[in-house]
Image: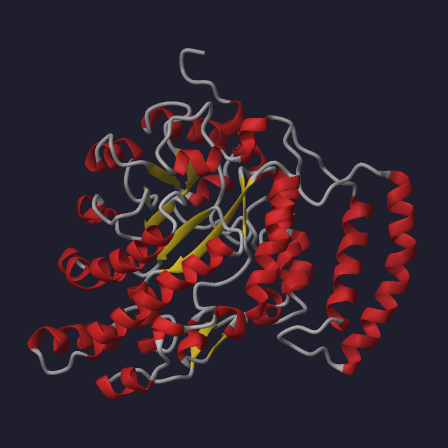
Length: 423
């Protein structure tokens, strides 16, 4: 079952979070102007909060499930176990399609939102409160751990990630920090608080907590290009120079990133994450040979580091745009392979084989369709994956900005309801 807090309760909670965040000691300091606004908000929020509590005393921070099995159904599915129904979560489920989310994203820079615990916890929980997915995923970014190696970045509204540290040569790689001995509590102190608080929220809501990391190639390409890139040309030149032996900067950089990412995944697990998804967001930039030579070994190393430390915590690998070489992903070392929307689920299942657990892969644009179209797409995907309880339902990419909010609810509800063609 799913609880839908009333609008007054949601507003009161949002105001209180904003007011508390502005006066707390976090990665960012609030300006005097924002403090003044927040103090006014706090006064108004107090009245709203009293009204909301009187109006609805049973509203919780996250949607509470009454089924005991829901606590770890996503975790069990990610391990490859057959479960009682198909679990569901959505990439970018915490995103700008939600009006409640935009109340923050329109006012605060991305890193302030993702690195301030009060903000990050609230943004992680909004979608779960509304729709009751089978997992809460930490609101963060794949680039978040880059500063642990001395790589500076920012996320600019309307532009995306911008990285100011140049990594193009072997000398540049050598100047980066020691990936083996990073103290993540020192470098990224907000992560433990965010995941610790979300872990308690997930337990209270009878659901799972998902952490995530970026794959080495994707983080390398972002850094090398310094921003999003259509052709990834500088990165590919470095790959070719690596192949000829003219410069080993690419392979050295990937190796350093793999170590850091593996250890960062361990840190998230030790802070409370029950599942880790590895995002190879730039897989679409690679031909199969490039994936096999550069991206795959680095991702395998990161996954191996996590699995050796925590063998019982499932790791999901997602190569966005990598469905053209899905057969190369069978032996990633991950517990589950997530597939993008460009491949039919039945084809993906046959390509990977029955012994490789699978996640995915609805086209995110189906959420702009009718309720009937969304529900049919959910049923088709579940059937093609082998039937209810045989895979982990997700989109084949993130929820798009502009997606109707009610459409996400229709998708989640149908996934939880569907018992199979013969039911």
